[in-house]
Image (cartoon, rainbow, N blue to C red; front, side):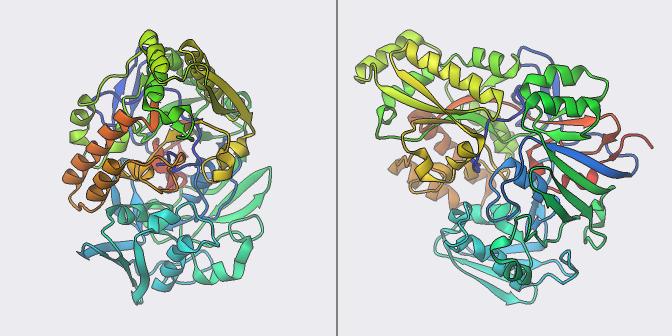
Length: 544
């Protein structure tokens, strides 16, 4: 997810409409009342190689340690450098990665058969011991991995052969296996981890993984550079460019100018404020891809006014989502019916429409909302919403929530924090003190919506406000023990219904993923799978 994967989740998504009904976030088209768009998992295939690629990130990665990577910038870089036991494809399917297969001989055992002949960037061979060391780092409190909770049901991880790893569980856990396609399943050289020590993943310690690119350098505040790894095992993803240079441009206008001037060949998560301009330029093209994310309001304190369900419902009812979409997304977004986007239901996409049709439409009724606040005795109560200059969308949504709250008698105060402090809210409980609400971009790393809904279970690290509901917890345990994807999706739909009813997270709007490609390049995957799929390898020349 993330409620953030999540999270250090930020509302920096492309401000465009979510995929229309029937598309389930994979492919399709729509308009949302604005300009038409098409959603596809990839851009047109490259017609040749290029020497170098320059890519724009909206922020500098705070780490390149896979165990700490919990946000878009670090994962966008690492997707090309480090790999997982399993792989999420651009069309949101899970396929073999560094493991050629996996078995589930009993509900509490997962066995992974590793791919032979895989080497790390220093030329050493990958073994089961490397996998065991890599996965166990998440379980070590000294690592501080935000992914540690993914291993909460793990009893042991052992080398059961030179190229075989066995994970034994204390209780059935289907999500753990699926997350082997995300950061929890990343494999690093055990020897390199020991050698790098506390510098691992930083500008001094670097990384040593198995992907199509090796980390060449990190000049803090300036750029990260990757170089093609000639010994890469997957010849179908041999890079079509020799080097990739990542630049960091936080200002949306400056980032747009980098696209238009050709200073950057492309970038994911196009600034919402520049979509119209970039869609009309001859300097390149904006593509829209599958997205598992929805913009939400996450409750951080259930001991304050928002601990009363009537107040949460009132605030939700006071939000004019259509106008929020107009202001934050140029009028081409769609209101969200649930905390997860339709695109998050890619595991069994044919069932998505039925699940969402069963949910109530978002209600906009200020008078009824004001009455609920009065009934709750919350008139005049203060609610603090955190905001940031990180992206214009955050401020737009924050101002809309403040205005809506005040219309119904709530004293909504905005507290602005620096971008890095905003990210801290999702990983540091201390950073949440004194806050009631945060704007999040809840997304899945895998095609299974259960990944998102686990974050609302009692005690989970992604349950920022420590919401607890016994009915929900029992439903989650049933879903996470169900190996059949269709039956698990039905059980997850029950979690979604409870979440919509209880509103520990207030849904806002959905949007597809976005990428800008300059006129000289093509071949990039367009969707959120780029966080783990080696997307840079497929980018090459637009013309032969």
